[in-house]
Length: 274
Figure (cartoon, one colour):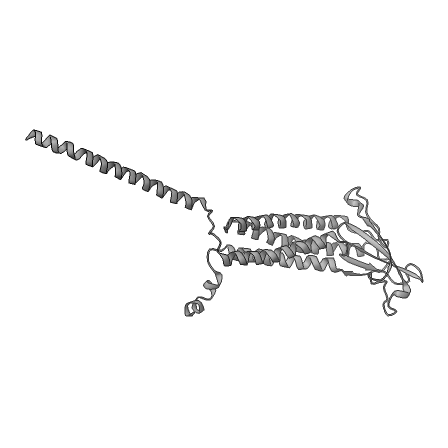
């Protein structure tokens, strides 16, 4: 009896051991497989992966932002922010003097009175042929102010406008880096910081324009002995369009970063009918 039990017990142990070993091996494989799945899921950022349609929309919004950045660089780097023109007889009867300046330098241009429209009271426009002379503002280096037509530009307002424009360009660069990372990694994680960077840069550009316009008004009010006709030029137009494009691009990136489609939330009935 005991011998029969011992023989049966010894015969059952290898099978159990082999079954237990296979189960343990399968359990270990399962744990490792599950751990691998968990590790793969954890490796993806919190944002969802981008689909092909989302990537196309991001590239389109980034193209708008790139155009805005290009226009900002063009406007900030040029000196055609405001054009100044006294009367045609301010200098002499044969020539008249016009000027224009931006954030960094000012230019004066000597024009022939015969080339000016007889119905025009002030000197100009600046696209007429003439001799021009440009100088950088010295208050960035030595603190010395510039005198144009016996008037002095508002140094503090001009410097503030330039600093806002530069900080806006820095935010544009940071936003562009975020979008490049989002497209290369294929995730939505970088869309929200890009949206903040582009939106703030557009707001700073608009603030720079407002402060610059105030500096022009302060410049005209510094001396009333020489009446001047002024008008904002094409550099301001470039910067204004750039600010609008950057705000639109920032809003687009924010909408693309949302976890749901806003159109489906706003128009659920039409989507259900379709």
